[in-house]
Figure 1: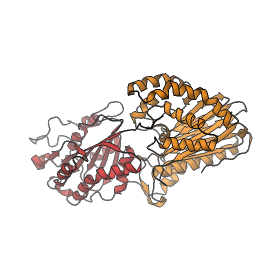
Figure 2: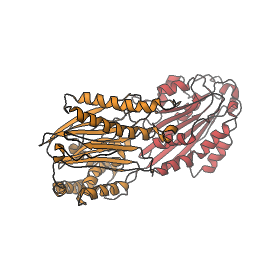
Figure 3: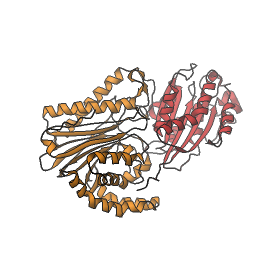
Figure 4: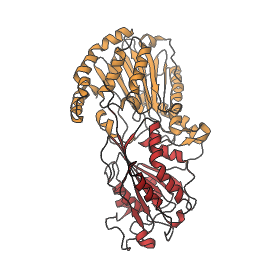
Length: 228
Length: 324
């Protein structure tokens, strides 16, 4: 019997980054984490003798449709890593913390974009990981619908967004087995509901204005690599 | 952790009992095991700490993860429980299997809660987090001198098997969200729906097997069976490595060397051989099965498409699930 057979791992990650003014103190850390995720996760996997065959990352930088107009949402396509590392780094480094208006932000719309990503359906073992970094609670979906650039195909209600995420009875826009949602977000609306009711979620609660640095970065990387 | 109390009447029926184990990261493997052979009962169990769900590290426990602590504590707890079970001279039967499962669950939960209560409260929330999560696949067995009686008890996706000259039989059923057959589950990668954990929100499944005069109990973590392209290769590995050996000790080495070529995870497999008397007789009993496996399945795999492998599996699985 030969040992040519090898399990392949394809990983897609979407980074949803709160780019409002209140993130000013921690945005560089978040950007730094995003930029190092590829190396850190692949190294953590390599220590377990696993190799990621295809890894793609996408960025959704979000603010507030009412307060920030055209700057409310930056959405990229997937970058294939390591081939498009330079493009990915340029994109992440261009994100600056400003705007936001009131305290809640449009994080649910960012999550909506992330869930409807063009996920890689190939490979024996897949992971489709969404990582949200924010220090703010969220508006209700559609709070910014009066803005001219508000997306027409966005989920209309939180229930619809929940259906987009799916569950074991009704699959959504993301593979039920492959999906993971990592929240670095306050334990408040609507992140707390997502944390309590959606499946495949790991929530690292942050305190508004205090940044996200209290968690052991190595543990976060382990959380991701161990679920791949 | 392992003990092998080689005295008493059950020993006349059990030929050998051993575990083959290895870890991907030295000193940080999240698998564990324990086993013990008493006068009347035997026990062997494997545990696979759930690394993604239990990745939190505990400073007061040598910075080990919750997954590592859970599997190792569970192994030790089961050894302690088994000794008390033997001392109490309970019966192992279908009438009291529920009581046995309840007793094991109470013990595992109690011990894991001690670790939970002595650690700082975790702020981490969400459906993919548990405190001290681990799978468990355990076999309790006894004999009436002519045949074996075994209770397979499990939570999670570590598995229990019975291997006889008729082939491998998977006794346990994985606790996963989307439950396919063993071939589908190699690529389904579905989420665990049940595992041992400190909050006690888990169940222990059980199934009783009896009537075999000789056979091999096998219990394994997924590092031992989930990295082949088909379930047939797992059975072939066990038998092929046995036939390539001249003693139990060399069989253990052969198994370890074999699985290292395939696995991408910590691996642990507990084996209990009974009823064959000698290693030579054991090998002789499996010559025919080895030939069938090789000619019907294994020799054909190398050039096969995925679809053809599924067709081959569909033929093999009638026997693999023969107890269902």
